[in-house]
Image 1 (cartoon, rainbow, N blue to C red):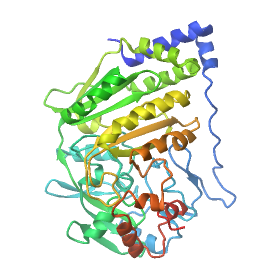
Image 2 (cartoon, rainbow, N blue to C red; image 1 turned 180 degrees about the vertical axis):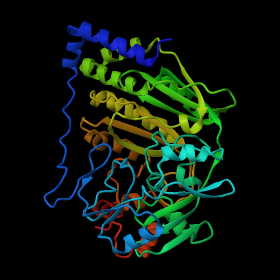
Image 3 (cartoon, rainbow, N blue to C red; image 1 turned 60 degrees about the vertical axis):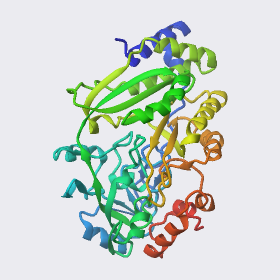
Image 4 (tube, rainbow, N blue to C red; image 1 turned 180 degrees about the horizontal axis):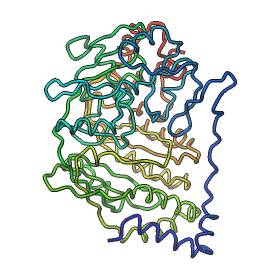
Amino acid sequence: MISRRGALIAGGTGAAVVAGGGVAAYKVATGDKPEPPSPASVNADGKLLWRNWSGIQNAYPAARLAPKDEGELATALKVAQAPIRPVGAGHSFTALAPTDGTLVSLDAMSGIVGWEGDEAIIRTGTRLGALGPLLAQKGRALPNLPDINKQSLGGALGTATHGTGMKIPAMHGDVTGLRLVTPSGKVIDADATRNPEVFQAARVSLGSLGVISQVRMRTSANRRLRRKVWLEPFDEALANAEGRWAQHRNFEFYAVPFTGLAANISHDETDDPALDRGPDQDTEFLLALRGLRNLLGFATPLRKAAAKALLSTAKPETAVDEGWKLLSTERPVRFNEMEFHLPVENQLKALAEVVATIEKERPDVFFPIEVRRIAADDAWLSPFQGGVRGSVAVHAYYRDDFSFLYELIEPIFRRYDGRPHWGKLHTLNGGQLAAIYPRWKDFLAVRQELDPEGRMLNPYLKGLFGLT
């Protein structure tokens, strides 16, 4: 069996040889942009640099705190220099975390601290990748996971991070209770009956109400899943997507620009014995797409023909294992990202327009475009509040210009009534967001009550909420 990796790497090497002189010529022909310049590791005041995963957000906080328990956290929030910003893994692309005041990490507040039936009580500093094996010890699992599992639980909940599945909500949709530590040091227990307005506001709150110290979450049985990955023409993926979302526990696909192809991924429960996922092939696939861009980006028809020829021998990939081992993927190649959540009737139309626009205007793009479906929930600032939504996520290699996301892609998403992912690039704020979130003013009222002095607000959040 020839994998995607084998086909692309072999084909890419062959293409380089034809282009003029073997691997050396291939390296010369890549045309990759240089590494983006890095900010100074220490500023003039001796403060250490904080930088997000992709490198586009940075700050020099005056103080960094890592409280060990809720008491230390409450004291810290009362006396720390504002703006106070909680931070997890730094996987948000927007400027949610940067502050010249106090950066608060909950890394020391992690782990499962108790159970109420099948609901786990989890400290929010817990990284998603660590949570899977902890829950599995009790035979339980989170119902779903996002594509990347490096985030802290608190960061994932605060930005409405999600996986894919027609009947499975984003992670905050499984939160049944929480403890919020406010900037005054007060600790509020909230759920659907106790402080319900705080509960509805806090489940997706961008760290703007205070800091959520722990949550109570629904879990599911830790079942094995069968993961299948297969390629097909993009037009066929579009035609079959709705049926596959209805058929599979989890389904998503990736439109691959300049290839005419799409990569499909499904997960379904099974009692079959484990079948190893094998070594990572996604990274090699991505690097090969970059190689095709660098070699043949000057001629779209030639680039598409080469991609189809290289991938024609690729066979479907199958793995069977516990869900927490399969639903997330390693993503070592850095990128910047814009993702919007659209009404389901608009999702695939918007996707087709996005792909056509990229292929017309931006031959430098090579990252696949991720397409998912997420169940509804009722959190006030949830992008999925009020109905099932379909997400479309467009990526740009971290070395490449990503201004096209704002100039070309965001207008498409907005025209199709999209709501932005809170942790990913967008330009919406104030009245624009109020127009698409029915409970926007209610959220701002709760926020003002819990943080009247704005201690949790950095400049980005003030602009987002229309407070500047």
